[in-house]
Length: 265
Image (cartoon, rainbow, N blue to C red):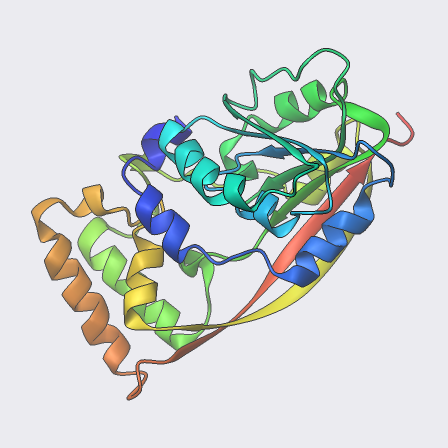
């Protein structure tokens, strides 16, 4: 399902999805026990943004994604910059079905900007056997434009709704809201000792980068607009022009990180 949601977005995804800030990488790094080998499992790796942010902090990395185009982009981006003593393996797989090599257990599992697409309870139950005794599971995301609250982002959302309707899209279907917050999902899982971190993020956008980001999402991917794509892009530019004379748009966002470890059953 996820592969179809993001079909045709990989070029936009790699170029326009915001990177993982160093401050977020520091929180993730601190969540994992020290040692060697230090093992990372990145679920829903996409084009490898989390692995890239944690480069040099883990020496045995498994990264999975169901989309082969995303994995190809991750391979191209990550392999040339990988430390000489690090091992990286990329697997085309859904988290609900993936099994790591025998006796391989992660010291840290990262699930970034993708947890809402997963069968959450199933994945966390399966991870119980895939995470080392002192290991942790980190679920993290920042806010998408769809749930933003500043004026120019609301204007962009209004344009999307004019073209595609008020119901948030998820590829050809409709987005289903998560029934439980991440914090509660973790507390209901084997990783029920949970800590929460927030990391503020300030970003500067242009009209071009905003459109590139939108076309990397499941709610505004190019295929949804058909032969009206150019019309949509022009409408977004027109809406944005009301908020800046310099093609500069400031976004105040934050990463919300939940780190779960095993505790009392």
